[in-house]
Length: 296
Length: 175
Image 1 (tube, rainbow over the protein chains, first blue to last red):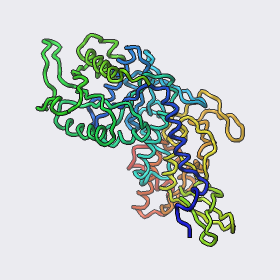
Image 2 (tube, rainbow over the protein chains, first blue to last red; image 1 turned 180 degrees about the vertical axis):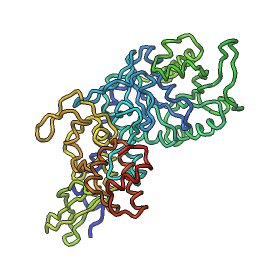
Image 3 (cartoon, chains in turn red, brown; image 1 turned 30 degrees about the vertical axis):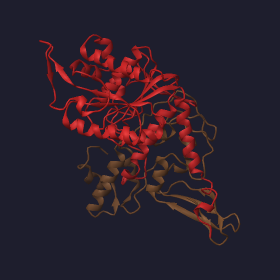
């Protein structure tokens, strides 16, 4: 009797061909993107999305064409932070036109597809019972469609803001095998550094994805009255000691940045000369420098 | 997956696939030599996994539409009109709806929109189903599960309007 290997195909479904076609669709779309950058942490609440929004603005202000994928399918925040929450997506046979900020930064986010403010992401299914068996797969497929089916056009940078969890980067790496690099975000707390170190190991040692560097968010607080720097967290180990990676910058906590995120206004445009803005611009410059010489 | 006709020692070929019934898809395979047919039943989880991967049994010869998986499977999606004209298989222009391509994609996975009872759960009366439809779509699945759970816990084989009234206190959504 014949065995599995003896049979020429899967009876006509061509599942492998269908998966390959999906992958080809991603590659074709990314052919016009020079650099893909994942913003990750592993730890929640360190300000990845806020940093992503501001880095996208900083890179745009420096003359780059920039797109952003809000890869947090279940907790999308970037449409609000970037002030495009009311944008209507336009569909055509060739793709979906992303939301565009006043500066021209492009964004795709699940928030732009949801019906109501309080509507969670619920997938059509015969039953939601045992949804844990397929929900993650659905989310990866949604991320694939975000990347492949958005009409990005020619981009210098496509930033992908990953949700918490060290498992997110491997999922993205499956979709984007030639990911340009990873920006790792942490805060100066030992708890954060503990988790973020795992993400660094995942990226560098297991997935062999270049790490552009580490950003220390909410690094300190500057008193608005006396200008003195005060720590917000209690990590004793310095960033250089904790991570053997390039340090891209330390962003001070600024309540105006949080307010700008809530209001969907451009912090860098409103407060270009404050320390946090300067630090964010510095991080953007280091990202640019990282890719200098890459002529793709 | 591959299928072998053990009588002929020949690879079977895909023949047909049915729309899901209570979440289960049936795929038919046929031996090209003796024409014996077999049916493969996918349970709801297996069917859902295929949907999640946006894969089609029997192959996919249609061009992929932008974000077709999200737009056809996201239950809590916006229902605003889309900005492009699209045509259905029958050639009619789609008017509004969350995805103009829903009718031409993953056909085999589209179930009737009317909720169907769980295979082993209490039976829904038409009146109760009508009331279930009035619950906002994004909380409907959870409400449905909750009502069924309430019915089972309280020994009801049938979900009527009265049972829903009794269960209402347990849920934030009104129905």
